[in-house]
Image (cartoon, rainbow, N blue to C red; front, side):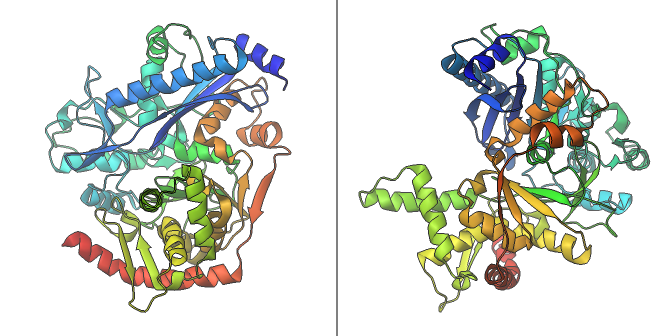
Length: 531
């Protein structure tokens, strides 16, 4: 598309906007009719640990939304010389799970408890046993039931529960709705009915009967809107929140709000069986589309859905790049003291290059990147740890490689269950996220860890904001019989290039040896946390 065509699409309101709330960055992407990005805007933010709870304030949510959108509008005007005043569609995506509950006046009852918290072990265990379905600690229903079990004072006032994406969507449209993928991280989904599982809903109501909760679960859950359908329009108050200057107008249709896992699937075109994707940033998770149900429930594996509502096996790990980033900062500090100033990107590339030179098994250096608790390995809270034997090959190369290994080690534990015990077949896994900004060696290491080909699409850097923009664009399709799979295959990814890395036996053997020591060392990690 030529510059004049892009400018006209913006002026005519034919472009589409996707906004995603990630754990460290809020990003907005404007795409054209060819689905290619036209402009973007960003706002950096961080969660905070307040009174032992990982949280973001609602003021931070609103201010971040405005800042991100203002950056998008500024970049549109700078690049095209026109103002962004309207759009053909919009979508909101955000980190899944967590606990956002409101009273009858839409007042927040307790600070937002994010996916990163590991405070619901009792509730998760009881619900898993009751449902015969794995309920992870970070799911919204686990947070709700834990609050009920503890008889927290706010539970009798709950009138609405949603996710971060659902909350922002409500601010913009006034509608309490959700996409089915994001809903699948609130409560289990019936894949046939494409709705919350009715039997499990009834079991939950029986479990909470006579408690201080006093509500039917269905009365507080957001309504599920199918992919491709309109889930509301931008209200006057929503437009004013988005753009306080009043330049951007109301009336834009919004697609159902979705979770970051689902927008990652859309952004990598991995929504059909035997495909999957790995998203690696502050957290790391895999999404593997299933051909059939698993033989049994596993605490390491969630069953969520694609944006279409099809079952997906999800291995979600709370920790990925945060500890790696901290080490890179330390290395940078050492270089600065030595009088060497390296740009951030060059510094990361140098550490990755060192990791590529390390021994396949890291020479006996083991790293645990646990900034937060990690349910997959039964660790209740965060204590980053590096261990080694006195005779280990403790070099900068092996330390760097161990730090990269630690980003994928916990994921491998869950994925080994899928591919080993459950015999789930994989044709291809697509990767995206901050860990893959320097593809080598992280792409090669992930390929070895999962023993399968890993592909980085040329679009991988666009992320979930682009993914939700694609779902918003799909909402406006003219052929209403067109499926999301067909739309992505034929209109978005046809002819798109990517780079694929296959695992080498040397790396497979190396990470296998590393994982043997890693699993044994978990006892020490737990002991540090417990004491």
